[in-house]
Length: 227
Image (cartoon, rainbow, N blue to C red):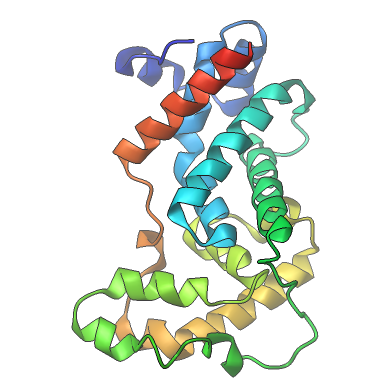
């Protein structure tokens, strides 16, 4: 399976997700690249929010794409393709961190908010990082220290801009759970970082072109090898 050249990619990129899926299933398998490039950053952010490591997030991305390609006929259009894909990514990321004992379920009943940002606060001084100009790194650090469960809600809702319903579908929880976790995450971040620095969330966990190209090439190679 060859990578689609830029001109062809631009032409196919005018199609909606469902149309691209139909073409892939009809035999134009190279068009899977269109979907990967369309959602690479969103998939990366979803994985990164859970595993908290850039390299491992890329590994999760690759496996999620391979899984999605293998089960593409199961996509029935009842949910948006992006939601279906993010769900696959989240399942893969959660499976990894749980196998490693690195994921602690979020306590939705706990009234505490202030303690969410307390981990390692003596090792990372937000004010010192803000003064040195590392605002994006500071915000990423702060998001990483939100508890498991709240962190991925915040990234999907605030960074990626998914709706409450889409986040709930992706994570397999109710809309109310998403709203509660998001509210608590916002309060913790606002108190310790956002109001203090003025940093903006869309700039965190970016997935730039060279990394995008690398993941696309690796996934296409794996898909071709398994064909």
